[in-house]
Image (cartoon, rainbow, N blue to C red):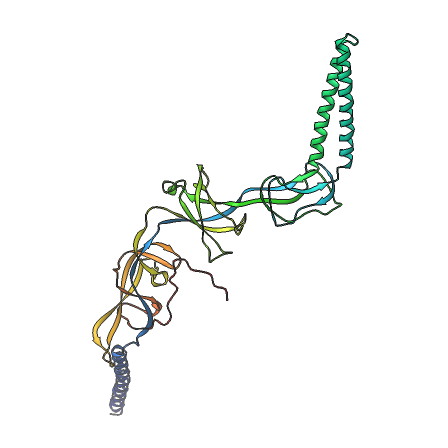
Length: 382
């Protein structure tokens, strides 16, 4: 009897424990279900975004490249002969004309030799003329007259040579241009080939740049180019293509192009880094957006269209939601990008705040601050 009683107690205890666990897990399940229903029914707050209406604008097709400025003419002004600097006539950094005297080296010795040779020439002329007259009356031989003539011509050649030597002691500007830094001092001894200064012909000036060989068909002489240097971000320099290299680089498959630009104020300098745009073809009409409006993804580029969902909020205003739309984009210019497919003029698209959006998200529009949307943005220093 005792064993039967104990078994009944054990069964009752197990049933009670089972009921207790069932109640606990049941309560937990009901709580989770109610919480899920709550979150499902709870609406996400609207996301604040900025928007813009899609509009069409004219685009000039261009090819872009990195350019390097190069002087039309540029040399290091050097010495042809060794000598001591006697006088410096030029001011560094100033423009000069071709033939302007820049530096005078001491030429006292060379001038003395020149004067001596000139005196010998005068004497040789007298001797030659006298012997020539005497030969007419057969007082001297023809051989004597020939020797006198040879001596005169030889001395005249030496005078010409010495005159050139003296001239080389005067250093002149080989062409019209702008001088560089002065590298010498009065009294300094210069060896052959020592640099006195630099000279650059800066107006006009060249810009050299490279383009891929597949763009060759779009290039021709006389095409307009626009050049921008970060030194002058507010200024666009205009020029034209003057040379297209007839050889394509076999290593890079690029072709070198040279454009010529007016540079009357010498703002552009040789060696300056620039951005070059070559105008190709007629202008085209493209739908245009700021680049910030495009969400670039591996699976495709998307924008968020803003539309009314047919409902009204508590203030009786239309509720706005977004719709993901895949687009095909084209060229860029400054902050802008051309949209080739996927949108229509007049569409309202999100330009900032996309990170919090998904298809169907409710949005509030605040256009107080808009992303930059300039075709030619300018650098602003603060």
